[in-house]
Length: 460
Ligand code: UD1
Ligand code: CA
Image: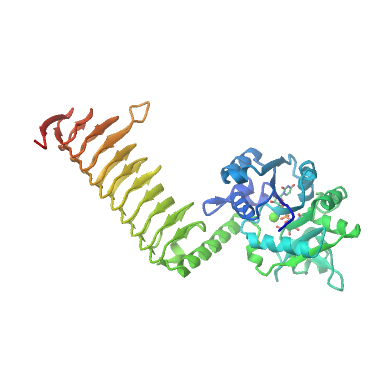
């Protein structure tokens, strides 16, 4: 595609029918907001600039949109405030200043169409260029039309205008070709037509949908492209529609994963975000939730009631029942749970095991290290082949600050050991049950008591 492409997302509306204090684009489908989904999609078109019209909760929308993008895209974002929502045409008018400085085409996208695919937008642009049009928009057909703008054609099938449902006559209302709210415009033509808009309609609003008619009147060409998959372009207007959309997307994702060789035992009770990747022969048990930017390797098993968010899991790992893993990395052949909580960059090296009722926060466990029962490991770096006895606690917080615990290779921490951080336990040492380790333990030492003292060197 040679012509520069700009994107303009209409996101100022509150979405009255959501009955929410939250702007519509901030509602989520799976773990991603509507606006984040749209930004991810339009980023695939390598746009010059992305303009977002904001109004309701402008600051929050801006914050979330920025957080949802990488640096390269964030640089392209420009927010335009529409302080009073006087219609989609008015929203685009608010961007006149920035559009005057932009080059090429602008794709205008309703902010409430979350699942539109980049390929669909590419098709729109291709048709726009092929037809040498001033404007091109997508149309869909729905037999029992929702409250969408109707596409009006003359007796030869040539496009004439879009009429909003509320402004339709009874015959017009029966038309099944509809406007889903995705348009491509030549910027200069759009700018001229925007000046001609008038709020003469049932809602007293400036309608973007009147622009094509003005362009035709000026002797310019308006193209349309019929999109077969109407569902892809569904708008979200209510919470029920939002839930329905998530359900459909979820099943698409599960079908994709199964086609790629993942066993999903019960798709109806499994919640996996569309962004998640899972390797073949991995088994996902019922009632599992996997969200965010998560990757799971081959031959893994994720058991019931576990909730995984932003995880990186290597091959042959097992997550047993009822675990919560957030921002966690399992390297390979790890076992976690049941009832384990790993979070904030918890990391297990190969074959490390974390068992029942163990919490691991911002800590790294080395190869073949085991912590099997009732333990808190926070801000800790633990070496290879370490055994952490039941009920061990890294006492990492002194009431003001967090401190580090370092446990070197081949250490055995006895049951009920308290490690008062900052503290280091040297390689090969052993702590007796109930020890309270308040200062560094040299290598190869046996410590016991409270405070723990060296009672024996383990190597002569
Ligand atoms: C619009 C179209 C209609 C189409 C439908 C598809 C118009 C006049 N009508 O109607 O033909 O079938 O979408 O869903 O465009 N917005 C603003 N500022 C405003 C008003 C709206 O930013 O002043 C944003 C909203 O946040 C939303 C989008 O524009 O993301 C569409 O607005 P909405 O009010 O939902 O339009 P519809 O009535 O659905
Ligand atoms: Ca709408």
